[in-house]
Length: 112
Length: 108
Image (cartoon, rainbow over all chains, first blue to last red; front, side):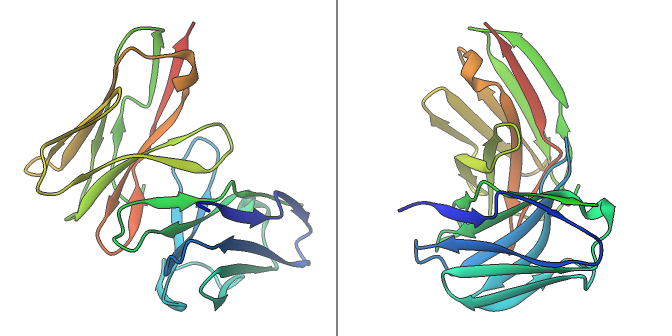
């Protein structure tokens, strides 16, 4: 199973809402990433988890809160977002030798 | 971008032609990877070249790497309409970050 599953596929939320994005992989990968991608732009790295510990935070605002409950799951908790946070949020897991990243299909987030 | 630039930003060709995309990066790397993204979907890994390699082939793909110039190129030969997508180079050195990307359109 080389799939990374992201849910939901689409999410519309108000600026006062709290929501969570979910990412799951069963490839035994120990590194998992969150990226944010705006239209016609490259994926922008947000967070890296390595062995279930947050290893990189690319100065992401605190309204984005990542969580790694176990080696297969990665969550991104969202609170008090702004309309400019509307984007495609991608999750990826990296193979053990960091030779290939497997991406989910993303969550299309719209903040209204 | 978090890593570097790619050129061209957009490339439009006819089926059967070759497509060449270039990528420059800023930092040291362990390896450089090329990914493809169909509109609004996740990225798919195409090919990896390690920092001590100069050229790699996989099917219709040819990748070169010049670490002295911090640049790489991706050549897709005999392009097909199904190759229409965005292509990103990603560099790995503790984390995987991406260049600006090239939007490739292959006309049937």
